[in-house]
Image 1: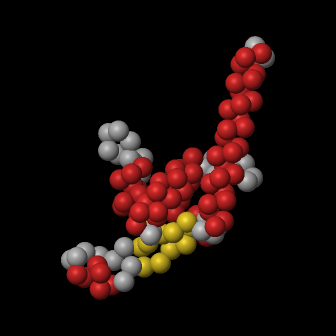
Image 2 (image 1 turned 135 degrees about the horizontal axis):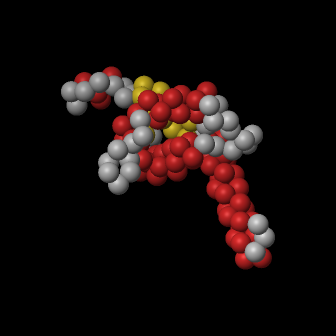
Image 3 (image 1 turned 90 degrees about the vertical axis):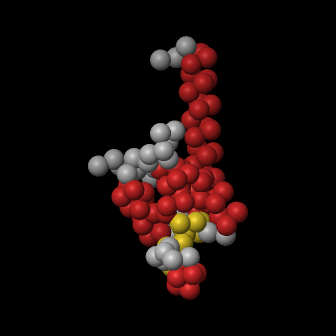
Length: 119
C-alpha cells in the first residue's frame, strides 16, 4: 500500500480536483463517468474505474468533495440510471492549491540542485 505524506494528495486525487474544477465550472457539478472520460489517457483508457471511485469515496470522506444523487426525474427523462454528482468543497479547492504550490516548490528545489550539480 502506498503511504501518503501528511498534507499531500495522491496524483489521482489532484487530477480529480483539477478536472473536477473545470467540469464544475461549466456544469455546476460532475459525475464519475464524465470525470473518467476526461482523465483517460491518449489511448482512451483510465487505469481502473474502481480506482477512480475509491478515490472519490476517500475524498468525500475527507471533505475534499461532496456528493449527492441527481434528481430521479432528470435521469428518467433521459432514459438512464441516476448519477452520483460531485462538487469540490472549499477544503478541496484549498488542498488542490496547496498541492500545486508544493509541487512548484519541489520543482524549484530540484532545478536548483541540478543547476548546482549537487547529487
